[in-house]
Length: 426
Image (cartoon, rainbow, N blue to C red; front, top):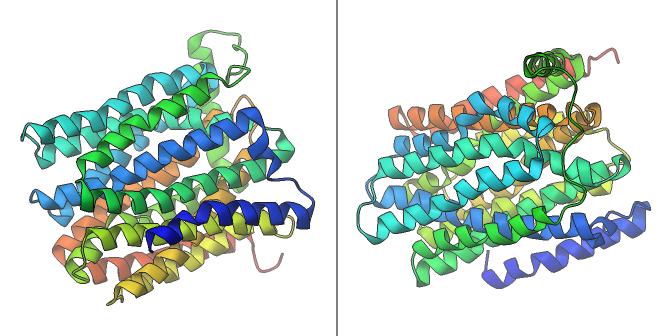
């Protein structure tokens, strides 16, 4: 997408939100005008723009210094794999400690990671294993702080505003997915990829300031009992969430989406570079296309949230997403990939945002962090395993075979979950 067109998306976004406000009577736009949520939203947007700028630069850096598709998948795996081990601990921390302090500490460490990569490149010491090691550090800090971040939104908005607040948060994330790669593509062609890492490091500052000014402190009152008793209570709460017929199937659907469909973004550089023989600027455009679709998904939720229940919308989108992954395996032109990525971005955000809305609506204040951690575990854990397996299949066979297999498995898995949640006789 041309840069000028990408720059018009914030204006289009606000227009659509305002239109939705007038048509359905629910003032979603008012959340952006509130001091706490509005500041948090815009600061998160800036931070995520920096993250997506690095997401364009890093895989290209890995490939440019001799990395293979397997190593590219391993790098993505290192960033997401810690969620399998640490996400539940992050959820317990989010429910028992000041969520702002958790974010400061772990995100502060994460802020230093792009600075380290810049330093290693500047002195000529950079190696692929170093990038993977830094990604592992980012994954650990993200796993421990992401549940606290996800728990902030329900703690600063009312229950009635929860669904539009989560949808708006998904919009800012995907708006950053539009702007970040577009900015990164221009910067990398003109100045080089180091500036993308530097911009990511700087983008943490406004986010930290917005979290600091959140009032009241984002935590729940301390619970009575010993640490062992509280830990046992947390474990029982996690078991209850997983074993619930409602929340358990929702988490399984999110896991399958990350496992089978998530790798399409990780391996877009392979498709663009090795299959379509395009350059880094066109890779940035492909990610921008995914972000456009991702931004349209939450807008669809805002426009239809009074007519469709979250879980049915989530499972339907996840099922169709599998079809799109099968189509990605057949692409032979950049415009085909871009078109499919627009649809994939829309379907992914509808599926995951709707599932997260449903899960948070089932949670109480004492288990909100644990619910968020399970959602993150399913989403990021599934993505980490999917990246590793997909990278291995690509190395052993081909990109087309890997995505065809992923798409077929996604369709089958989501069809089973849909049938269990919504039996034919209902």
